[in-house]
View 1: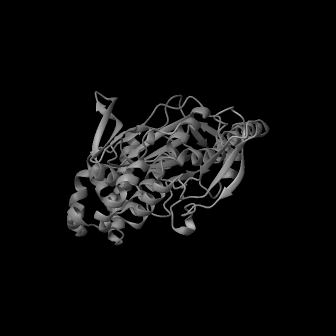
View 2 (view 1 turned 45 degrees about the vertical axis):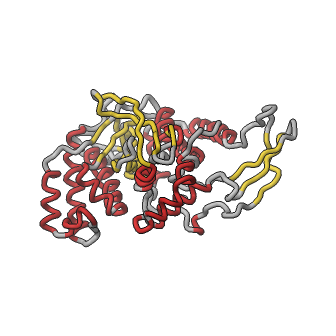
View 3 (view 1 turned 60 degrees about the vertical axis):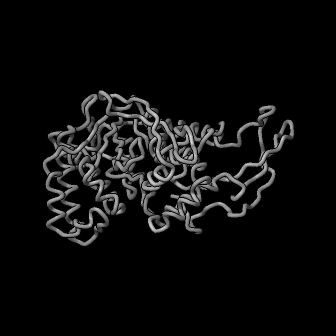
Length: 399
């Protein structure tokens, strides 16, 4: 795979040191760590190895990745490893994609209280789906779902939302049957939206009353309860955006979608266009043009680009991929096995397919072939870099 002509790392390497110095009081430790890790990713500062071609003996040096979750270069391999596990859990049913988005006024509160409010977003989105699905008027079944947090829009602004991937059905109340949803339809969006709004606002007020929220700068006045309640009042009557996309064509399409979304970062290197001493230009899609996406190029001052990128750094230890209902970590293996039994899925067939895909995946992560003869490259030596590979023990965020 060829290296993009411009990377986010190039912005940090050229302008990061001076920008960090000028904004030291406004950067968190996690943000500074992310900048440093991206700057040294796949450079001589980290560990590396020497590869030699088995056919023509050509040698080359490869440096290790930083492996942090915010690095644009490290997420493909992380997604591949994650997908090896997930593909073994797929069920042979249609899958649906539901997106829960926070209104802009609530997003402003979330920005200053990331761990608490993002966690509440996960919790209420999952509770909304599982509650409505259990209702006999809609599906009458216990469902499972995987939720992925994104905090950005195409222009890198703060836009927190959760993508939920849900099988089209679930187990009956007595767990004796698999209950299928209607073809092409999962749950009513308006019902989901109203319950999501109520549950989230109740949870947000409870967090405020428990002293779990903080307010600074332009929203410092919200620390007073009357002001906070008045601020939330308009959100109680506005429609909250819950978007249900078309169902996936099959499990293979679910895997392709998850590979794109689960480990996505705020901006990929493929969208970078130009870097100068003053600005960064990148491609983005504007979805506000007649309800369709239109590709555009945006120019931001270098400092503003770095600020927007770093606002999406998550708190240390915060999990941006979570599983609920039938897929909750405690009983996921047992529940998936029961779902397959109710669906009359052959375990042996599932396992043989999984092994074949796993073998292909392992082959895909071998060193790229020799550039000169196409032969297989073999690692013949490893070495340490000046900074060594970022590791959780050294304080880098690798989750």
